[in-house]
Length: 362
Image (cartoon, rainbow, N blue to C red; front, side, top):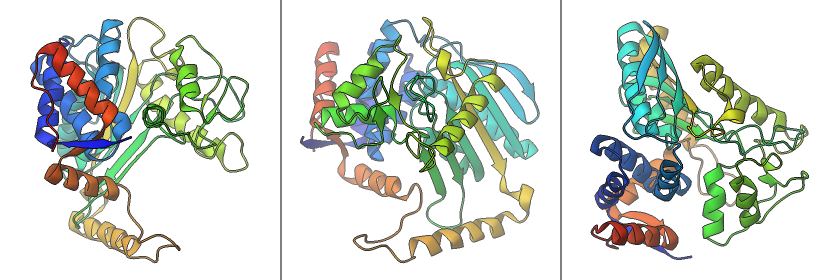
């Protein structure tokens, strides 16, 4: 499959225009377009503008209400519970994280759990939002059912990503953004579009057998009433290589994003006409633990030591979490965001349908 590049700002503008055409208010279209374009710019195409088609489908199915606004339904000096009222996930997340950061700056730390939301994009963007304000940040979300618990075959859990960001005094923070499954669900679609087999250990079929055909995997997940087969958690299908550890991380995310918010866990997400995705966010001041500058420097020293450590044979160097994405983003802003042909054609189709200026290749 071939690739094309499109200017970063043009991608954001086109995505926002498409979202407005499908009834997103301008402000909510803008933040959502930025979230999608940022994912593509960082090389996380599973969460990029290809999601425009998914968002439209969910809107037409009645899962999302772009006109709805989030509401704080419980609050303390260091916590929030937010009801998204089935609105736009990126808008709900931005609203919540701004409140979390405000409270953390005033009171040292803040945690927020969100119910009745939608897909919020790349989790790391919300953790990074706190980091840019000099705070430690985290973001978690449950998802539609797509994963099986370790030693099981019933599809009950989600990809349940974890994102954590910590500032340093160097050019980069530490920014972890990971699914608790071996791969995010969206990556199956990427492999399908690109005609590639998915690796063994990512997915099992309805009887627990290994699946490497991305078309078969996406077909299994396409049935919202289906119960059997799905993605595997980090460590695989058994306890031998630690599958129970990835499963445990998933359960942590589920509890934070479901029960704490007074909302459902993944088993019950998207099982009614309304989407009811849950999130969890946090922000914390470094000075709760001592001198902020000293902490930043110590984090920076550790990151430098890892980046300069000896690579294994066949590898050029060791990276820290978030570094490869930062490198890709810098290149994307300078040279254009790289999109595969199928995604570029999707944008052209949307532009033609809505009378928008089609995307221009660099």
